[in-house]
Length: 243
Image (cartoon, one colour):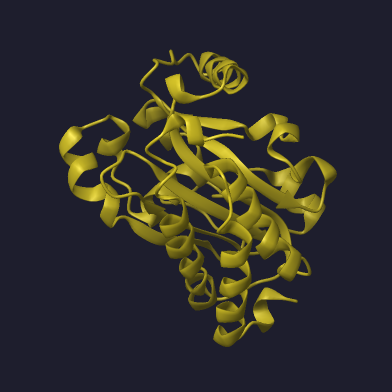
């Protein structure tokens, strides 16, 4: 089915399917993968790539991802600390075989949120955080921001046209030009939210081969609410993050 052809009743039906799919998940990774697979399988006529990320501290990550993010930060002359946050890939589904499982997505295992400057240098990441309402003070680890804001945070990231949309600095928000051209990427949107009484938030980013309006993208925030309610039990225990 095409996303542009969805009615809200279709979203409600899909929510029921997704809830059934993720309700028996044993950890955060399996829940994230079940979520993106369920949505992708229903909407693969439109979806090129669908990914779900969660903020995890560097010290809470598996060794392989720690090494990846440390090397990525080093290439940008940034030193990763154990308490630095990483926007970590937990679920992925898409047109290419390597987009079907987290372990095969070698290039985007995690995005260090080590400094404001580093985040601001990535147009999509800075626009994503801004549109979802995440204050960069949270990245600095300011306790009052984490305590007061995290559980309240939710929103929709929306880029009408991946080929032309620019940020406030005049940069293309979706800077992966080759990816946009090869797969004819049109609208990109994301949903996200924070977990109450934790330092964790998640975001699901969807790349489409068609244009949709912002109002239709906002409908997908229902999946954010569902995912948060089904996975809140996992985010407080690092032993329940990964398979």
